[in-house]
Amino acid sequence: MALLDCRLPGREGAEVAEAIREQGLPTRVLALSAYTDDKYVYGMLQAGAAGYLLKDEPLETVVAAVQAVARGEEWY
Image (cartoon, rainbow, N blue to C red; front, side, top):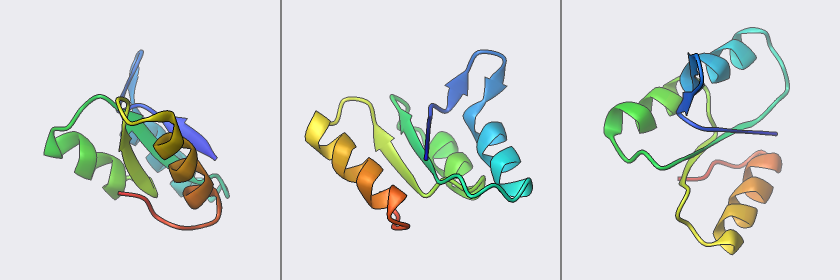
């Protein structure tokens, strides 16, 4: 399980998610970001993220999303 932001220092979160997917790692990715722009949301999902969550969500929602993605579900 990895929580990735869309914008990371020196690299885009979608690049990291895609690298995880391409290497065949069993790591599930959940995007946790402040960005609501379609290009970031769809970019992360196309790169292999199993869900997208905004940083201003309540802690309970973040926990539920992490648990769902860890179980193999998707979260949007």
